[in-house]
Length: 71
Image (cartoon, rainbow, N blue to C red; front, side):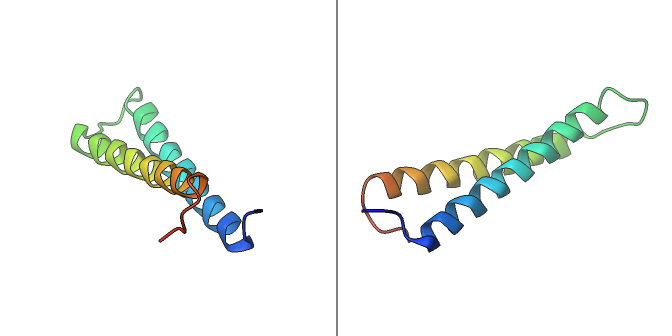
């Protein structure tokens, strides 16, 4: 059965959120190589946010592939 339009929208939304979290993490990590101070705590927060966004996307895609309805 083809994916419903809402499924596509939701997967695209989750992909974009994961991409955004990765970019924020990567930019902050790169900022650490510059002359201005950065916070290890902030980098950990951004890494955690990125990991969580990736996990949400993965869980959604696995659930959709398994044939069950997304929550």
